[in-house]
Amino acid sequence: MNEAEMTSKGGCEVVFRDDIAILTMQMGENRFNEHFFNEIGSKLDQVEKNANCRILITTGSDRFFSNGLDLDYVSTLDADGVREYSLKVKHLMYRILTFPLLTIAAINGHAFAGGAFLAMSHDYQVMNTCRGWWCLNEVLIGIPFNYFFRELAKAKLPTPAYHQATVLGRRFTGGEALQAGIVSRVVAGPVLPQTLMLAREVYPKDGYDRQTLRGFKESAYDYIIHNDTSIDAHGLSAHAQKAKL
Picture 1: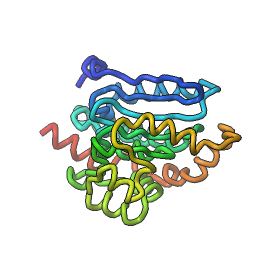
Picture 2 (picture 1 turned 180 degrees about the vertical axis):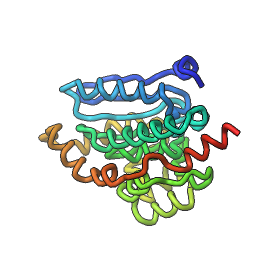
Picture 3 (picture 1 turned 90 degrees about the vertical axis):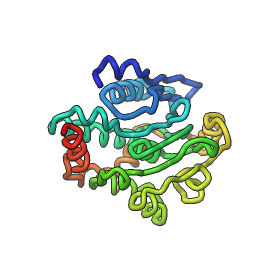
Picture 4 (picture 1 turned 30 degrees about the vertical axis):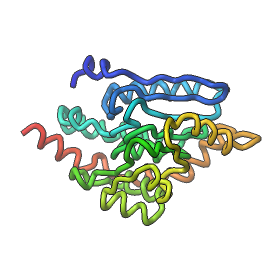
């Protein structure tokens, strides 16, 4: 897929409602490729530059929150490109993990693999019970987790859910995800109204100092990226090579 084709798949939009930024991914399945990284990165920059913003809500459109890695795009990359791609994925997750605002993923539809990790990287998650699965399906497509993603899952998932999600690749409905402790709240229908309500409920009266909040998040999750010696998940390299045969 070339840049023109990726661009034709849409982009991201940010709307500010008072002190809340609503970032909507509007690129079909919202798979991770160069266009996706550019779009979401620029919108996160825009949110950070708004000094009045206190809360970030990230959501998708139509049937998809995000289906994660764009494996068709990965298959066009050489070895250096795959390594760079892997780093961009990890850096996006880490940016969300340590974002200096309260963050909530409004999971409107399917969240698979990297898309599930993207949702997981937020402080809170609200999921639609009527549409979409939450699933880490890497075991089903033969892409092993590297240190970064194993530790991210361990940090964010309760122990029983960790095994079911990362080892068995179980698909969770919204209701099952709530019961397993994967998401914070569920709603039967559009997720945004309930997400806005949750944002007001959990945001502290005196607010957060951005630097302090980022510092606390970094102290909680720094080990995940600093102890990660893997440049690339071997499964990604193998997939790229296999696709070229």
